[in-house]
Image 1 (tube, rainbow, N blue to C red):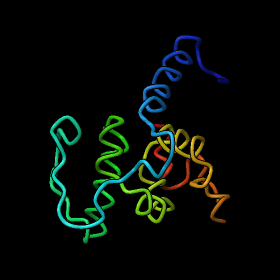
Image 2 (spheres, helix red, strand yellow; image 1 turned 45 degrees about the vertical axis):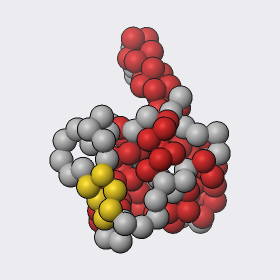
Image 3 (cartoon, rainbow, N blue to C red; image 1 turned 120 degrees about the vertical axis):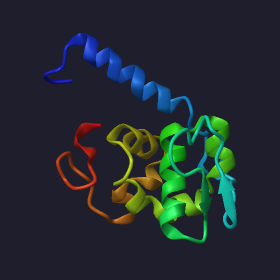
Image 4 (tube, helix red, strand yellow; image 1 turned 45 degrees about the horizontal axis):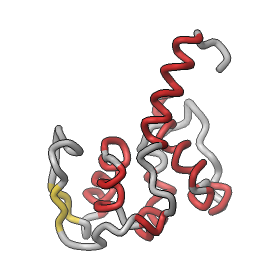
Length: 132
């Protein structure tokens, strides 16, 4: 990448690979709950709220954001639902890191904003997380 040292580039590639290896092969493998209360395990929600009510949009968004950032492959499949993920993605993509967003949108082009008609986020825009 432009302006990055070889060490920084290698670190970024390892960081990206960490998320890529967690992804399911297909969105339909995400068969988590669609309603009720969900308590996340400590290895996923090690800080903050652990129990989320899926009927509360902010709590549901918080659960998805946490699982996307901290969950392992089995956690993604157990706690996320593919239909809820797709429905929430236009907003959710603004709440996750650019790396998480890019990994998911690269693997699943149907999540990319051009697939839904929404404009893509650019670094520096609200929700773009300033490159984190």
